[in-house]
View 1 (cartoon, rainbow, N blue to C red):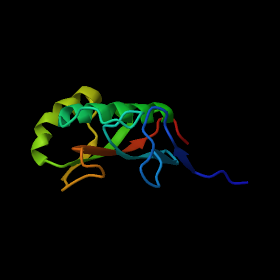
View 2 (spheres, helix red, strand yellow):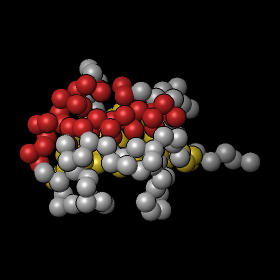
View 3 (cartoon, helix red, strand yellow):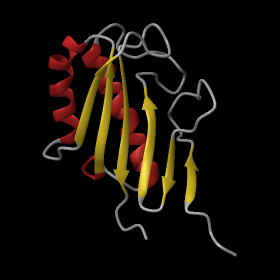
Amino acid sequence: MTQSKRREFRVAGLPAAISHYTDAVRFGDILFVSGLTAHDAAGQLVGGADAAAQTRQILKNLTLVLDAAGATMADVLKVTVFLTDIDDRAVINPVRREFFGDARPASTLIEVSKLALPEMKVEIEAVVGLPGAS
């Protein structure tokens, strides 16, 4: 019997999905992380209207996903950052450096008119190369 290369992750510590998706999907040695928000496990927004504080919570949530998959921030190949105000780029970049350190993933930044919930200012998705995967 052939083992599927696809595995879905629901990660403890993340809020429940608000529609039909999972937190991440592994396919072979690649992990696709769904758009993460600044919500805690109870579904409460962390950071209020502060884009830097929201980004910090999002990257903490990303760390939870990476831990569940056996990866680290250094394994993140690409991020896509969605901002409701492109001028927030300047305040989120230091937070990104705080979490990624010397690792510099490929990155796309997009300003959007709004995100899934009105209080959200930032959403980040990621593609990860899993270490030691076969």
